[in-house]
Length: 248
Image (cartoon, rainbow, N blue to C red):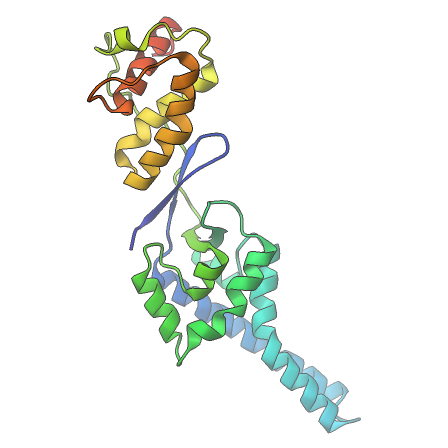
């Protein structure tokens, strides 16, 4: 099971979320169960007081429907309308998001919560806990179907670290050429790429090479070099552009 989820935003910024541990999720769920149970009791007392004197059968039906559906309605409405949080999740500092890093959709909130009976089988959330132990992103069955993850509320903001070559001339600058027409946005994208690349999972690294480095390299005429990883060419581009424009 991995501890972090790294995603690439539409602005080509790498955002890292810390995945919630099972303990935090269990505690949040216990708090939510206490809240739902309390609401059920309050509703049952009100129904018995107001309607019970008229028709005990109708009162029992209303209470039965409330107990049956309040559990699902609570989680769906809170997660779908409160940006992935229930009262219990907020208290524990966790939130549901799409696996892409985007806010959870209402449809995903419905999907992940309607699958709760499967996670509960055969009891005590056995299958859900087993799925969380066995999946790399700690996802229960509902998460897998809805493509959601549970993350800690606080996340590491995108940041720059000192470039590997913070002074002097990069040995590959002659290979990358003059970088005619390179924009500050492209420079920032390449610098984020170079700064964060070593600490990311291989799958994210490969994705960044395809989606960040290669389009800029093709546009600015940076040709591949034999036995040289694109990271080093990106570093060279960052060093050259940064030095020439007073950014280092």
